[in-house]
Image 1: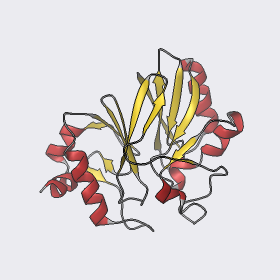
Image 2: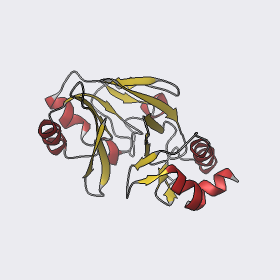
Image 3: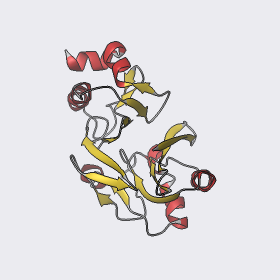
Length: 201
């Protein structure tokens, strides 16, 4: 398993290529913009993109979807139903395609990699985190030293606290791959992230 990190769009959203080196296939996590750059990186890495996995439906995580689908028209775009229901509103722009719903406990295959879905609402009603091996894609739920904002439509401080508590209870350590800013580890956030400590306490 290999993970490629690309910062895309005007606010530097973290987009990830989750690559299975055995099957030479990949999923794109949160293509926030710059579809051509994402496609070029996949080609350079020798992988075929088979799916798009969205942690939530805010524009800065989805703007690149249309360009990817123009080049790869038959790949599924996965999104939680609670965010699907909000598509077409100002902060949840339409994707131009009917997403494939995934929910808590579902597993999406990326080649031989199992990607488990954790429903972690709070930043948005349909926010999810994605677990793949020792990697945890946290979208805008958990950041290095911080968490996602809850003041946008559909946000909930109470729900994101419950989501952070759930992440804190995961057994073992994970590499935290957030939607913005630097990468971290779950142990680091358990020990030093004020919001996660509040959620745990």
